[in-house]
Length: 517
Image (cartoon, rainbow, N blue to C red; front, side, top):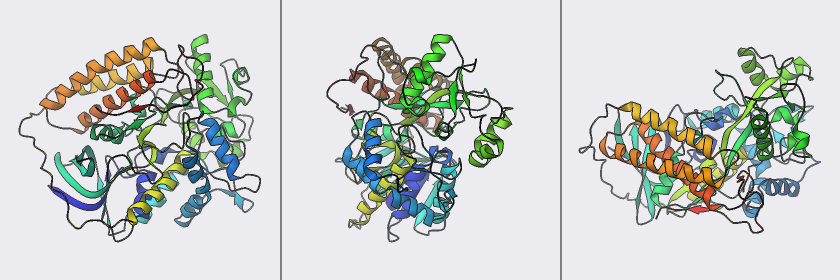
């Protein structure tokens, strides 16, 4: 079966939804969600969006903070575009119904790690939910935008270095459909599910990055996986995120005996960038044999906590933790992929007619470490520039031809346990060998183990019918190998990449580029 559209958007997070909303009404658009439409990392974002919205702040300060946090690898042009468009992005979101929190007639702005001013606009502690639902409400009744829920992309349709859509599995019918499009936007998010412990939902398996890699795109700086310092440590919490905004409001990190420790690692203490805080927690846990450390905001009034962090308060209380009187057990977890598909300021990749936005893209805005609350901002700003670039082009009237997917030489697998086993093995290898602190020996061990798993995955893919789990496994192993190859290629410690064998930062900053030969 073939479906033909002007634009195919793979992914329905904030970047994908904003791209669709900004595209011309004259264009037919297909949006692909591999789960429910709103399921994804954007929906679970708690903190907010950074923007210069106060008279006490300015663009140059926001740019300087972002570049400093990025460890010398941020692209100043990308950062400047993102920062200078930030107030417009906030206004655009408000216009579609996002109810940013106000106090005394002004935005209630918070401070997070790396920021020198209060510049994080938020909707209590559920900003992502509000943005996602507001964007979805704007597009769901648009007759030009066609939503495909529970569809998962397999591979891009590429001929002569130009993309014309993708092969996509309809999870409901188990049929593989061919979606042909003049323009394709990858908005699939990051690859943090490559790690055993992550704050991300199950959708974050690096699908778009892996597909783009197989299609010939350059994948940049994938060694920079950001580990969020504070995820709730509880057997039933599934790595529920404890927002950095708590630390912005004064919450302190403490050991089980109540002692503070961040002063030993950075003068900014709890408001140091995430890489520093995550390594500090990792060090304390490993040195002392702790399962976790704790976050303390109990000095705040209970009514204040419930007003500012209602979602976190309720979630912790559901696990028997009253954060107004008890310490919150926390551990670091893989949170954000700073690298991705290399793009320009219009979100164009090196493959013709293929764009990437959001966490799947490498715009250069984050460098070696993403500053808190710049991620949703990047989604909104670059989705707009992507859509404007597409709107300005005259699209051809004819669509290219592609063959239907051929399933005639494969059979139904009766060994699904193999897929789940390999999935678990990949994530444990990445957590143990390619985690917060790395070494040459660990990285090369990971490379060897993952190469063997890749052989098994390829064999399984060749012999058996495609399934959603197999597609994700194939993308996960590809993403994991790209991360390891990038990490081996960086012979220094910078930003989120810390290698014990190269503890110092090199004098010259370079990007690591991985491309399929």
